[in-house]
Image (cartoon, rainbow, N blue to C red; front, top):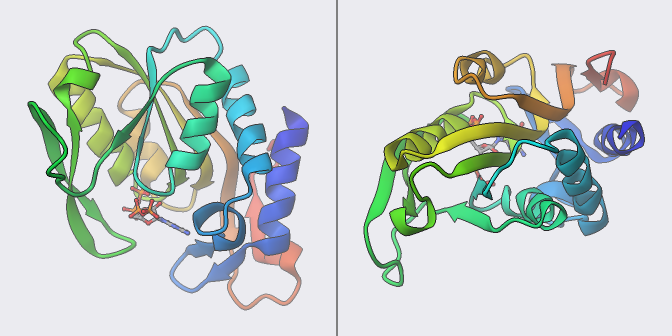
Length: 202
Ligand code: G4P
């Protein structure tokens, strides 16, 4: 476990880029080119941390959440449920939906999922790549509530602890596991290890 965290933190320090406005660029291994070996380690780490939560599926939101959530689902032997951001003609049956505001991108989208795949009483583990304002996870929690299902846990790959997401999610009462918690970012800092700071215990 510790080693996976260490590998993720090291990668963030080596290849991440702190941008102005509290944005971390990680598109060389998370958001665009995806390091699947690292994703496998992330999936294994979540599977260990959430052992015993008795989830029936792993849920995420397209698109960047799919790789870590998919590897988590594989490690836990569970189906992956992908919430959509756009309506699709191929989607049939009753859909649950909720508006989600993306502060980072300054847009709003309609998060949706087929009711058929989220049965009443199902226990759901939500996994996403970033926790910033918490809007995506709160949207997923609303869909889970609409379905009469249960949010059993929240797994986050990179948490920006200097933003309000964690505080907002804690009110949901589900256990939250973040594999890398960034406390501070200093864009423009020349020494990479000083530009991104993590929680000591991580
Ligand atoms: P949230 O992730 O906590 O819901 O907060 P917010 O509404 O601010 O996030 C909006 C989008 O921006 C999300 O992606 C989120 O993953 C992404 N994001 C937030 N902070 C960062 C950051 O520091 N670095 C990067 N690389 N992404 C960030 P999304 O709209 O769901 O897009 P995608 O999954 O299709 O990429």
